[in-house]
Length: 84
Image (cartoon, rainbow, N blue to C red; front, side, top):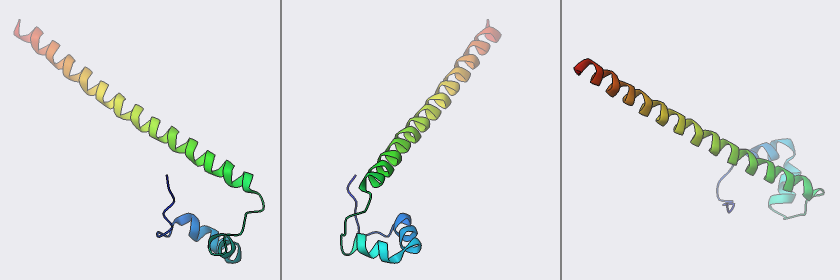
C-alpha cells in the first residue's frame, strides 16, 4: 500500500509528540533511521496483524452466514413436519 503523505496519520502525531526533532529529520530532511531493521520489523508486524484481522473478520462473517443458513434449514424441516 503506497504511503500518501498528504494525510496526517496517528503514527505521525505520535512520532512528532515523542520527539519532534526526530520526526522532522525523518519526514522533512529524509534522514536515514539509525535502526532501519526495527522499522522493517514494525511494518511486517502491522502487515501480519492486518492479515490476521481480515481473516478473523471473514471467519466471523462465514460463521454467521452458516448459522443463519442452518436456522433457515431447521425452520423448513420443522415446518415440513408440522404440515405432514
